[in-house]
Length: 257
View 1 (spheres, rainbow, N blue to C red):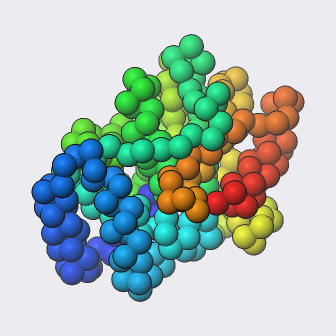
View 2 (cartoon, helix red, strand yellow):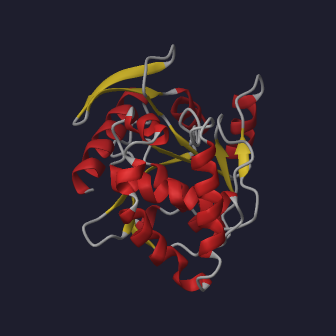
């Protein structure tokens, strides 16, 4: 969305990859309907291992996910990568903002809360074809399925493709916070410190008069995966106002985690 981080896993770690395959095979013994609940329990137990991994270090640079979210996200990623099916149970906060075919083109943007990947599955299950912007994982699957995700890779035609998708009434999703400065990213202060927010996609969506939805994911105190949705409070359609609303959303989502 840029939904990848820098790498989806520590590429040089044979142990990590082998552990992922072993976990995926072990989960196939569990009835499909129980796999997601068991994954939450297993992810909690392996947190000390995940805390020492390069993958956690990569994700920590964004200061969005905690160890609980990262541990579960990495486990679910390994299951999906190796074709082990599961059915996520999500709690949606802001159900009115879930896109529908009647909404027209929709751009969904959020910070790097990586369990947001599960919202792609939620939308696909609801019949909403969703295009994921991701420079790191071109071959990713829709989480918990063996189906390939619709992935948009950066290219010379990238913004043309996004504009066409929005004009055709499609849904596009991206994580737009950055761990370091970029040429077209605004530096903003959040509750987690200074971050950088890439604004070209927002700018494009506003020009297209597409619907803009904010998204974030976390695990709550009852070990539920919560997807939080909101929309810009400002009706001006101006980029600075929308960016300000996005920063407020990030802060509120962090406090609600």
